[in-house]
Image 1 (cartoon, rainbow, N blue to C red):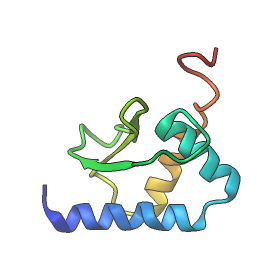
Image 2: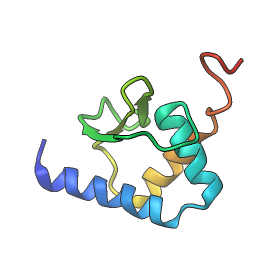
Image 3: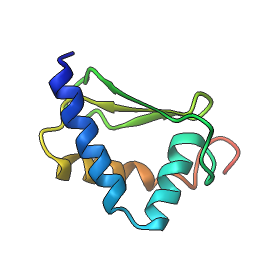
Image 4: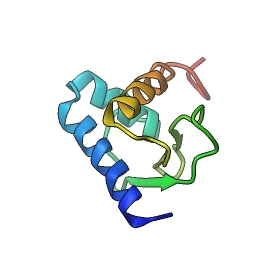
Length: 95
């Protein structure tokens, strides 16, 4: 994957974090790690997309957030991240 594309996606994510409210950041941490408190080490991975329907995913055990590389704008990424954050109250141990 080209480094330039990874840098662009990382920049979109950085902007999302800078502009997010404290509640959104709390939900992001919960989506990313399973907790509302920051972990020692958080990993962001820009990965090859499986198509435009491919949303960001997380591996909470490894504190890894995976963002597909198909995003052409920060608005698209922000929309999909907000969709993902709607799931933070469900899942293993939360039902």
